[in-house]
Length: 241
Image 1 (tube, rainbow, N blue to C red):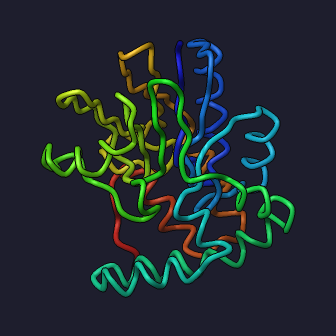
Image 2 (tube, rainbow, N blue to C red):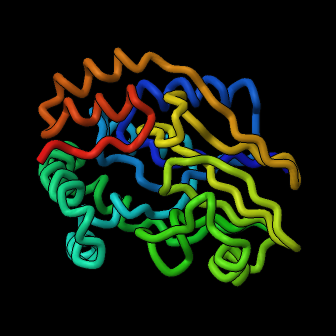
């Protein structure tokens, strides 16, 4: 069975449409989404509508959860004070995102589970215990195994960190999908995962970043210029203080 996992779209319809075109070429049997669908882009409502039309099942992400549970953002911010400027920036983008989504789409997001699984694959947004915390690519084998080994599947998949990789451990393969939008790994192209049995491939898809940047600048979202800077740089850019 061939499974695709598409994660961290962040309201970027331009990148998402490019990924959909690529999926038309790779033709997986099943597509799952990894959460973080809407916050941080120009078209949050359109992303939700399209994912629903496609019938993709998936999981809740941290920037989904904070839309109806802002205390999750505040708790994380208290525990990681060095990220205070980033958390403040993210917080300020919540109200316009909610306005664009509306109540019915928000209710759909709230119903996304924390895990999806098939016979061989378990998918979470970040880790089984948290939508906010996940191992980085340089984590030890022990951390990977302690985080994802309990999921009970030979392949564990997550998103969240916007850096794709494949790690093969004893009896466990851990894969990060990368992100459709706001890449942090130096490659500005959209990223998604294609699994063919136990073989994992990270697909990179070019899209018109400048078209998306224009859409972001025109959509009225706070910190639009910062979002565009991150799209172009394909790495974490600290927000202006």
